[in-house]
Length: 75
Image (cartoon, rainbow, N blue to C red; front, side, top):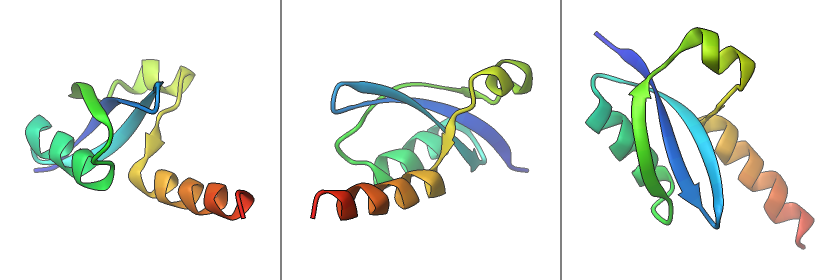
């Protein structure tokens, strides 16, 4: 059974929230760390639909797409 977890990370002085589908909290944290090795994991919690609707987090795929856009701007 898979759950959705919100992983709070600190990267380059900015705090971000990322949503990951995983079996448990440790797996969710490791997936984020694999995608963003420079980031520090601050917390992992189960997704809170009501609170996260007000302040929407990113997903791992959003971060990859955003990184591509940022890299083209600097060229």
